[in-house]
Structures are given as C-alpha cells and as structure tokens.
Length: 195
Image (cartoon, rainbow, N blue to C red; front, side, top):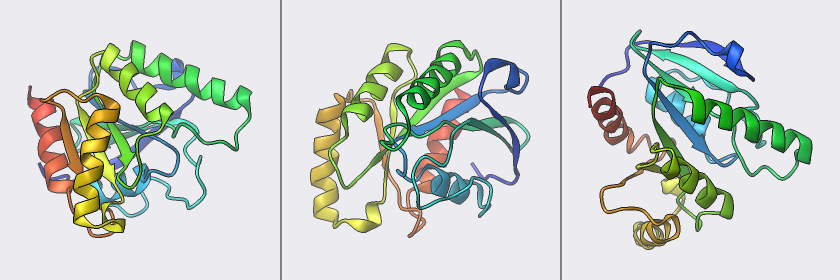
C-alpha cells in the first residue's frame, strides 16, 4: 500500500465528537513517548501530521486521520505517563474504553512497544484488553535503531513471552529514524483492510 493522501480530521474526547461511521479504522496504541506520532508521520510521509514532542503525554485526545480517502488511522492517547493526575489518567482510560469497546468501524489496534525494554505492566494490560475485544494481533517494536541486532532478537523473544503472543500474531520492528519497517507495516494494514 502507498499512502498518497493523509489529512487530519478531528480530535475527540467523547463519542459525540467522533467522525461519522462507515469508514474502516486502524488505531495505534502505546505508552507515552513510544514513538507513535513519529511513526504516523513516517507512514504517511507527512512530517507534521501528528504532533511530535520529546515530552511524553502530548496526545491527550483521540485523533482521527483520513488516509487515501478510504480509511482512517486513529491515534490513541499514550498510556502510562506518570506526571498526569489520577483523575486525568482515569479520564483517558474511560475515553479509550469508550472508543475501543463501542466503535464498529475499528478493525484492529496496532500496539507499539519500545524494542529496548521488556513490556511494562501497562503494555501487558493493554494487550490483554485488546485480545479480549478481538483487536490484538499486531505489535510494532519502535526505536530499533537504538539497539544492536542481537539485542533486538533477544528482546523480540522477551516481548513475545511477556505479552503472551500467539504464533500468528505479527511483530514488526520499525525505526522512524532509519525509516525501516514501514513497508511491512503498510502491507499488514493493507491486508487488514482487505480481509
């Protein structure tokens, strides 16, 4: 798949603000600062499409992007950011649940995990949650340029074990810096949209 057009549609904090249904959606989830915005910009070839920040917790709403006029990429707020209040964290949780549980157009959630570390308790919780709703199956490992190939291979095994991935779950290592892994991810997304 080649992404020829990408446009920001809207930011939503509740259901009434979502774009109208009838367009398939693939959402991206991950911890704060895992590299979601950088990956979305790389995938779409648009540098400023998703706001990138070195300080975590930048995405505080659900952001919808129309891709090739035919499907949407949905950028979910990062989870696990320690510097937000408990009330704010709970609000994010409810906002994510409302979207993940009630959105008929949502076909898959791509979970991003930092390739350098063992998945956090929140990563595991998120993957279990996605599995429960039939939305799991695709894990993208970010920041692969920051570790050696041997470390990456070791960490892939660790990540598979920690998230209890099934044999048919897909793991795609990517590097926004080196621009690697995007072709595999786009092909995977195309497969999801066509299935």
